[in-house]
Length: 259
Image 1 (cartoon, rainbow, N blue to C red):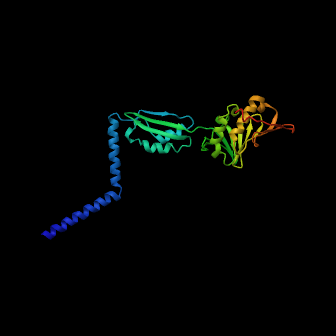
Image 2: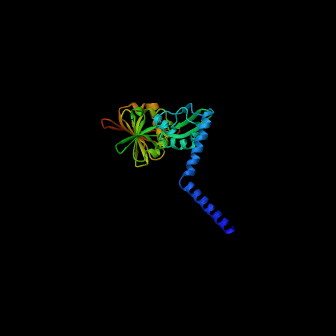
Image 3: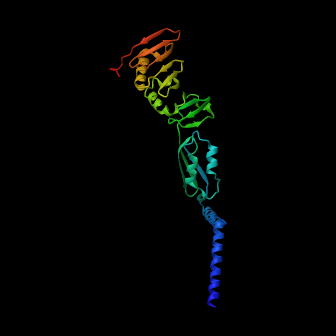
């Protein structure tokens, strides 16, 4: 009798273990958890915790349809079914988005706060034009007509040096409005093309000082509005210009004591 009972107990144990293994291996356990979660979400929604408003702040250039598809919510959806952390990860993959803050604002609001990247230049490379930010991040190559006023950069390594260039130009507000394009030469220095067609050759070293000399020449001699073809700043403390007809004249500037 004892042996029989022991055998029955072992049989029940084996069956229980088999049933448990089937429950987990078949995915029934996971489906049960998901079913339970959805029931809880539905109960919470019935108690007033549902989506009634999706508030988006900070969006300027990022595609609204893409953001809407990532959030993927309709009015009346259970608010606790929404995953802010996963949504943040996905939204921050959008090229325009530097940072995203996503949260549930109970009981009925989803908040999406965006910090977008700043478009500073058009990068022309390999017969393509793309919008980039100061860090050289490519933002888009679509709808470029919106960015027609941005400076055009050329050169394979131009995006990596964009922030440094714009820091120099921003420091000289009398020069910046004249600049139409900038070409990186040998990954070392810049040639600036002005809106009137004049090319300004900057040195590889002390480009900021060269721009300061140019600003002083603009202030004293209106140099950027003269009929010139090229302004060469590569020799320290010296400005060499070439007029359009081909005649060459030199302007020696010694502003060191005046700056």
